[in-house]
Length: 480
Image (cartoon, rainbow, N blue to C red; front, side):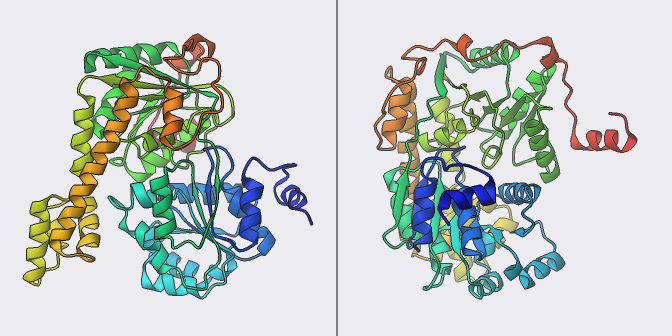
């Protein structure tokens, strides 16, 4: 049976989107594959269809618990019951039940941290898998070194006679691609690289002399234009501050960041997806795996720390193919805040010395965390690298990481301060060539926001936003 017929049979689609068929053919031929497909281009189909064709389980390594759960829930809504997320949401009894019946599942989602646990690794090695998928594979380079060391161990966990590995991402520079090939130990992978350009997204930019003027512009803009939209900030405090100001103006908005309870985050996300919220004000904790097709605006209240993050975040807009706008706000000194945050999560040399001292005194270095001498994130990174290399070499590695972060910030800053076409610079950053510029391309080429953004109506001002506890009470009492 032809692939198109199988696509129609299992998913009801008459044809493939660009890149899907090419990737699936290579995987079915047993070849490792890297697929760079923009957000909304149907990356998940690249492993879902082979799972049905090969009729074996597929292992999907995913960075976020909420992302895994969201994908499992979506599959179940579409009738696929044989999907499971093996993560810390499961209690011991549930986890053991899943482990014992892993062979019965078609799609197994797992975090890198869970993957490296000996019990889990041994159980997975007993299964005959169709594919191993590394979702959001750019994390190997951008997060792995800094925040998720277990991403770097994926290649070591995979057995020698493994099935093909599929690495999926929306964006990656050549350096990131090299990291993906190396750390996943890929064997001459086939690479499908789609243009990072999204012609339906228009790139705006506003520069202000002060943070206060920037905030005033943001509030005025959001008050007068329709969403749905996401406002990205650099800190939890700023996120809550902007959300409060929007609520005071009568707008349906909520903040979203890692400091909120998991239930609150899940409920806020669901409200946004269902249209009960027009605006989410978020740190970069929000967005990955959130399937909302009609996001019309992405606004960056502060410059992102690198171009790749920026492209990932603006990629949340216009997934329905309709026009959307991404507006980046900048005020003098923003880069200093970003530089401070960039180095904050990396261990400093004093912590490296202390780690070394704990080891020499036969004290588990984890006590540093318990004694409040290092954050969990910094410890995780430090523990990984100190286990590989001598202290002085680790110091050199971290100095290099900091310099790399600063270079990435400067790359982003140069695009902000340049008078050239924003779209062109973004595409060139990923080593690609812009084929054509759409009308109303960007701030420098000329953009009429009125062409893409509808004025806000009174209806939108009257929506109410509730916490999940209040909403649950309403449902139970029947006071909708």
